[in-house]
Length: 89
Image 1 (spheres, rainbow, N blue to C red):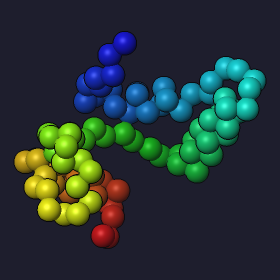
Image 2: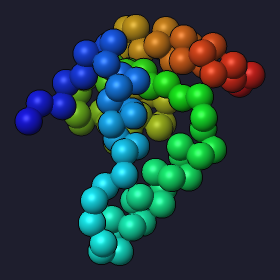
Image 3: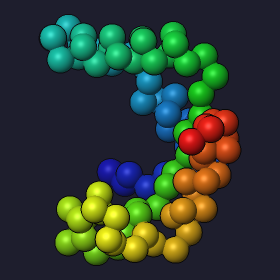
Image 4: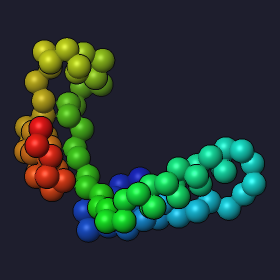
């Protein structure tokens, strides 16, 4: 199964992920509770895709240090996301 999501299907992907899962065990009940909380609290929601911040897997562990340059375009995607959610940060 492919996990590639086309840009115009991001919102659909989110809504499909928030659908109630069928089953009765504790793990499914816990996931369904989270889904219910998210859909109840966030009436208006959207989903956007972000590219990986870096290409080299080895640099992922050092990403938090701030010494690893981010991939070109990642910063612009984050800025667009912040403006979409009106983040004052």
